[in-house]
Amino acid sequence: MVVVSCGTDPVSDEGLITSPNETAADDGSVPFFSQARTFDRLWSSISARVEEVFDNGKFSHGRQVGELERRLADYTGARFAVGVNSGTDALILLLRAAGLRPGDEVVVPAYSFVSTATSVLLAGGRPVFADIDPVTYALDAAEVDRVAGPRTRFVMPAHLFCQMADMPALREVVDRRGLTLLEDSAESIGMRQAGIHAGLHGAGGVLSFFPSKTLGALGDAGAVLTNDPQIAELVSGLRHHGRFGRTLDNFPGISTETGLVGTNSKMDDIQAAVLLAKMTSLDADIARRAELAEGYRERLRGVPGVLRLPQVVERGPGSVAVFYAYLIEVEHRDELVDHLARCGIGTETYYPTPLHLQPCFAGHGHRRGDFPTSEAASERAVALPLYPDLEDGQLDRVCSAVREFCFRRCA
Image 1 (cartoon, rainbow, N blue to C red):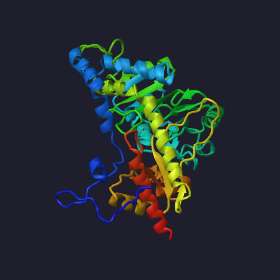
Image 2: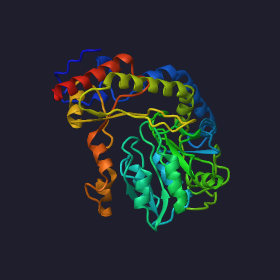
Image 3: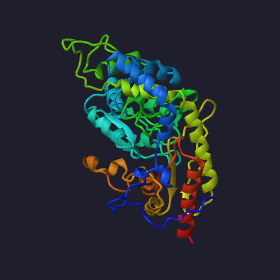
Image 4: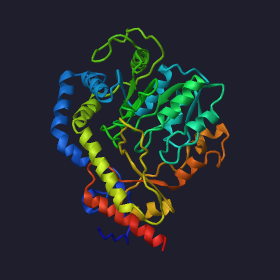
């Protein structure tokens, strides 16, 4: 085990404390996320695809996007994969295409990234919060049953960190109440339950290709997954200002008719080119993430003050967990974050303010105590570095620093 000395803060040339995520990895620090070595390894194939974009002369909504859509459909088993410019836009367009009407309620988890709920507002609906399962951090089916009301039309779980929500339990509630199931599966590429990929257990789901995701671009990009041809057609039109017909890899004139009020959410071909090159190593990257997660489990098991390590719930044959993030719950979480920062180790706090207590949702009238499981997670959960470029020695360094803090704090 590596012995870690953490007596000083990392400082910049100006004498200011810098984020560990901004510190170069070769100085002994461990950034929360890096894909520098991945890009070094894949650069020849990435640059070749980027050159194709320049040769084609269409820099968004072109043939690389079309190829990526086909590859995503093959990988996930979706009938349709529709590329858009971010995971957030994917949620908004999916909600609209699925028939969300002004004022319709959508049940979402109280513990998730804010776009899970703001996408509902931006699509014209109203988010209704429900508490989460304490093990999976995903929407609890019993809580959905409790909070759903006469104006509820949709239920949208978010699959977080390493595993999906309990889809059969949610499906039972949705079917019994006559609701529509959508999935915020932004983090979930590769995850499956009963052989069905995340995002395909209901009317549709989404993928995000934000750089730190399991399959990450150089910037923002996303996709809608669905087996419903009508939803796919509507999303395809909505992403291109409401234009239908031949748009992908085409140069339509400005006089092309607009069928409905859409937006500009076309995916850039540069991002599609990067994603296509990175898909060649996606399964290997997922396997490396699993190795690192097992390394954390072995090194942190039984450490005092660590309240929970990730527990993957067995969902039966055909179910696959994918470690997007390695989330632990720990006593004195914020003190641990500060300690790791002094050691040059980056972390990410998921999510320090649960959605029902976010200022933008103050009008919903919630108070602390309304969703206790979500609130407990927001006070104790922190993600440690986990990405394919992370080396075993860096893993040792992170675990040694966590152990040092916990043993010293609990002594």
